[in-house]
Length: 75
Image 1 (cartoon, rainbow, N blue to C red):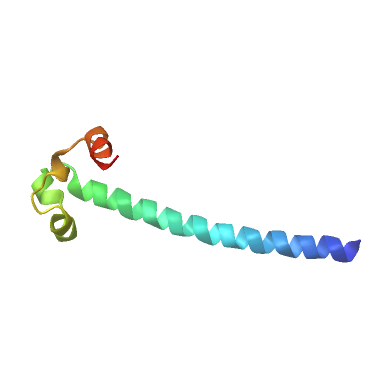
Image 2 (tube, rainbow, N blue to C red):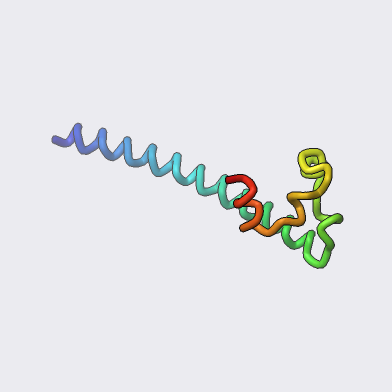
């Protein structure tokens, strides 16, 4: 019974460690996105769009769409 409990505890600890690592990664991603948002405040759309985004949407059609319009075009 003790061995089963110890095995379960080890499994739970490993799962916790995995989740903590995942949370840290997500926190870092949120922080990076918040920093990017702060950098873009007060700028126009042309200043905010990256080169990679321009390559995908050369004509700038999708950049001007609202989220709802973009979803309707995709689906």
